[in-house]
Every structure is written in C-alpha cells, then in structure tokens.
Image 1 (cartoon, rainbow, N blue to C red):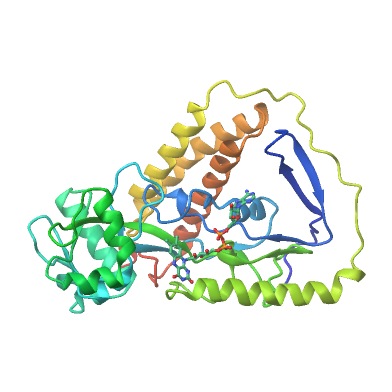
Image 2 (cartoon, helix red, strand yellow; image 1 turned 30 degrees about the vertical axis):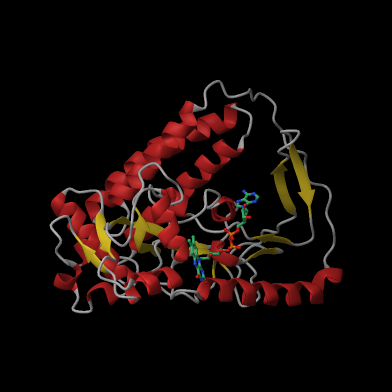
Length: 351
Ligand SMILES: Cc1cc2nc3c(=O)[nH]c(=O)nc-3n(C[C@H](O)[C@H](O)[C@H](O)COP(=O)(O)OP(=O)(O)OC[C@H]3O[C@@H](n4cnc5c(N)ncnc54)[C@H](O)[C@@H]3O)c2cc1C
C-alpha cells in the first residue's frame, strides 16, 4: 500500500475518566485497536463500545479507510426490543436443524435458496429482511421444538438458559429473532505490518481493513486476523523503534470556551435517530433513494453535533455520537460509489 499522506502520528489526546480532563499521550508508535462499529445500527450483536472510534479518528486524521459498505449482518439475533447488544443465537443452532419461520409458520427462506436455513449469513439475512418488509412485522422465529432436547441442551446450554430467563422455553416456544449488525469488514487500511497510511500509526483487529475478509467475513476469521496482524506489527515496531525520534512539541488540548453540557438528551436522541436512519435506509438491503435520504439526514446530525463538540466539554457520549456519525457517513458514501453487488453489500438498484 502506498502512503497517501506525509502525516505522522505522535500519540493521542485522551479523556481521563477520573479527572474529566483531556490529556496528551505522546508515543513514538500508536496503535488503534478499538473494535468494530455495529452500534451505528439499532440491532447489533456488538458490545456497547463498538462505536467505531478508531475508524472515525483515523478518517478525521486523513488516513485511508475503505470497504465500509461491507457490514456483515448475523441473521439470528434474539429479538428483545430496547436491548443492546442483542443476544446472539449461534449459527450452529441452524446447523443443528432449527427452522426459521414467519408468523404463519412458513419456512420462507426456502423460497430464496434451496439450502434454506443453511444458506450463508448474507442470504439468510436478506431473506428475513425481505419477509419483514413484506409482512410489516419486526421479527421472525427460530423453531427448535422438533429437535432432540437433551442433546440440544448439551450443545447450547447458554442459549437455552438465556431464553428460559426471559420466559422462552425452547422445547415449546419459537424464539423471536431478527438480523443484527455483526461485523465491520472494512476499516482503516493497513499493510501486512498493520501500518496505516499515516506514519507511525498502526491498526489491528476489527477497526482495521486488511483485505483478508474481502466483501464478507467467514466466521471466526476475525480473531485469527487480529492475532496475526498484531504480531506482524509487534515485529515491525521492535525492529525500528530505536530509529524513531520522540516528539514532545505537541500542544496541550485547548478546552477554552467550552461549557458543561446542559442536557444529555441532545446526544442520546441523536444517537437513537442515527441508529434508526441506518437500520431503515442503510442496512441489509440498500437502494439509491434510501442512501440519498440517509445522507441528507446525516448532514443535519453532523452539523448539530459539530456545534455541540465545539461548545461543550468533551464526554464519551459526545465523542461516540460524533464517531458514529462519521461511521454512518463512511458506510453511506462508500455504498454510493459501489457499482456492483458483492458479499455483504446489496443495493436493489444494481440488480
Ligand atoms: C457475539 C459475537 C460473537 C463473535 N464470535 C466470533 C467468533 O466465534 N470468532 C471470531 O473470529 N470472531 C467472532 N466475533 C468477532 C470478534 O469477536 C471481534 O471481531 C473481535 O473481538 C474484535 O476484537 P478487537 O480487539 O478488534 O475489538 P474489541 O474486542 O471490541 O476491543 C476493542 C477495545 O477497545 C476499547 N475501546 C473502544 N473505543 C475506545 C476508545 N475510544 N478509547 C479507549 N478504548 C476504546 C474497548 O473498550 C475494547 O476494550 C464475534 C463478535 C460478536 C459480537
């Protein structure tokens, strides 16, 4: 990968959660490993920290970020309104023989693919998405009632117990499910040594884009990727760390003119709106008009949030909102320039 900029990273400004002050953390080498960005959607299996902070920061610093249009959705997250992250019903449950049904009991995935429930994540997710749009329902079901329950429990004790805790007996009840954002295939472009396009800035894990996942990650490859690329980075850095000079002529953070936020509702409401925009317009199935609408609404959120950022004291909530807006912008704009449906990306207007 050729370097796009002559920029160099000298560390980061970090919020000290105890003092609430922003501190300068200077370093010869900095590595971003802040995870994925699934929280940009209403339903996600990703932890609450998956707000794309590293990707958004890198983009603002003008690092190359790509493939953000490839968001992998997991077809079978437990439908529990208001709960984030969504509880994941492992794919292995379908492998074990569970059926996906609509309210009428039909195994509708078979209409899309003869492999039915055993088709790949993107195909099953797309079939569920279509069913939900046609029926106007907000979830479908996973039916395990025909399976041998002793063996099921041995294989899936956590799933069985979790369902029981919320009043679902998997031996008798269908499990309500919905597709949920699961993996950010794109991210900060890195080379084989995990170096980004900014000098002395590395990235590893889900925030990075190594190219290894192509347009659609194969299950379990993410941990492999995180380990291998972090190892490459460690070897590369060890070899050159002594030849890198340390810079401390970096200005302290300037918080002049900012005040404590008066109302957190401005931030929490924007985050909910953002997740709705992304879930309704930029999820499993996209279209040109939905992308255009999403972009025009994102511009409003961007302007409002930048204003807040300039005038109020920095908080994790504000930073995460700002970063999620950047992530949404990257997913939308990179979706707009993609001219071919591939892997986890599907735009109905591309046929
Ligand atoms: C339910 C579920 C099941 C999965 N199953 C598998 C599997 O079987 N096999 C597989 O290979 N992959 C699986 N994945 C994907 C895999 O778990 C993730 O891709 C992987 O954990 C990402 O690792 P990471 O180190 O990049 O990020 P994370 O593990 O998310 O770690 C990111 C860290 O950065 C911190 N952080 C984030 N933002 C900031 C900030 N602004 N400042 C300071 N710290 C910050 C977070 O607190 C966190 O500690 C699964 C994912 C999910 C959600």
